[in-house]
Length: 244
Length: 244
Image 1 (cartoon, one colour):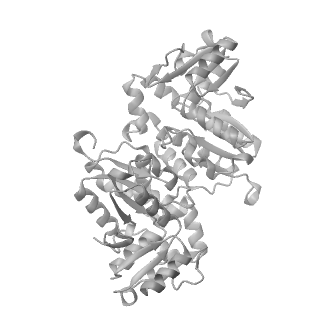
Image 2 (cartoon, chains in turn red, purple):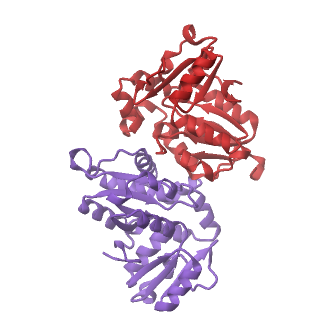
Image 3 (cartoon, one colour):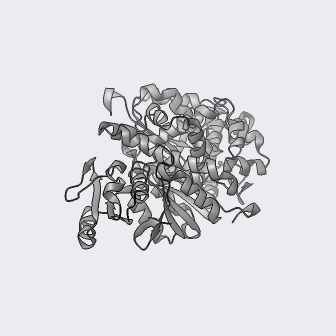
């Protein structure tokens, strides 16, 4: 806790930077905007029983068999061999996912979640633009230290996760002590781009914008940059992401 | 080399991220704006024979004795015990430093320089606002891959080093292929702040702004954020930083 009894908020712009912050005293918000955490919020919003994040295709297949879950994950923009579905939030409408368990393998986001777990995070939730307000409301309500943890891309800082961190900060800043240049940088960038995040990503040649546009996924990008389309709070508990 | 035969430019916002980039094919620009690389440029501009960067106080004292150099370095805002001078560029006017060797111990910048050396950097130079144009001219002239390597603060990303990276990018961008969100983020922030960098640091609560203002160093901050006050190119060669 800092001055004025406000809890601390830090932003870790890459998993490689996470060790710099006191994870064990903090709520860690896992951020993987394109597209893991957007898809997690969407599946839960649409009635999925839970989402099980796993770090490999083989583990995804194994758990999927054991619990008769929906297996999902991509590698290089394609549904991974042996799995049934991909990473797009549009694959998980209510008609399909309600009452089912989604076993999702992602690389960057899942690894970060497991890192946070190993470091004894006080609580782990997932954040994305589709559940921006739910995340902010929860952080304000809890009054605990916070780490906004960007999944990045193979440890390289990316624009969309940084923008989401900035969006959260711009909404919760008065409730926290923020002595963290990464947070100020993220907020500043968000302020600059918030009028049209899609256009901002495009104009600033965000690497992920190019990658996903190359796969024909403009609709996914637009959805994943729009606030509150699936406004629920995924909370990690004993291997699963569940609604709070 | 990328498309169009333009060399690549990447920005590493913290030493912890340096391993993500191909140091061995690149010119590495060491950036420690407040104040190591600003002071290095200033001492060389004012006629210092060379600057020897070392990573500890004891090593600084040892080399200082051997070569009868000027020993300098601070810890927690004070001249370190056993050394003669501090980190301020204003301590090194021509009347004093001309013809002398400055043995300077800094923590963040020197460590990053040694990391770059170990990874086999093709060339190492130092960058700061006082020598902004010299750095940009050199990078454009060399036509090699570039890594803008921010020294940060105990591995935490800081605003002033990121701003300097952004300043370089805004001036050299058309000569390089920049597929790097960290670079785009830095450039965007610089564009937002460039009208008055001192005011930008203040308004955005940059951690180093507060730290140095607390030591009464407003004059240092202002100088270190002003372009081309000591417009020379420090080049690392066999343990020393010398003018190109």
